[in-house]
Amino acid sequence: MEFELKELGGDAYAFRYEQDGQTKAEITWTLLGDVMVMDHTYVSEDLRGGGVAKKLLDRAAEYAREKQYKMEAVCSYVVSAFNRYEEYNDVKA
Image 1 (cartoon, rainbow, N blue to C red):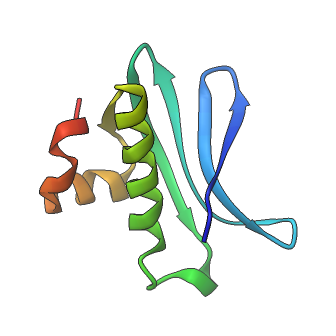
Image 2: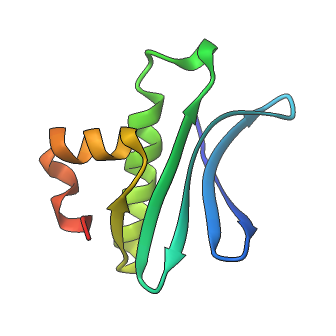
């Protein structure tokens, strides 16, 4: 499953997985300086339970590392993942 980087306008961005013209999964953020404010994670019902949300967050964290950004968790999923997994400590704002 590949996630495509999308510019949503202004300072808003997303990694998105689309299938047959429909958004099946995405994680969105607003870029404030060098901080990605992670504000939304969505996974369609047919993909839930397969670790897709974590894969989205992993891709966003990889992007943050590439760009030397930090990530601020606002979305409830990202807040939970940041508390649960130490692998994101280096990108936490």
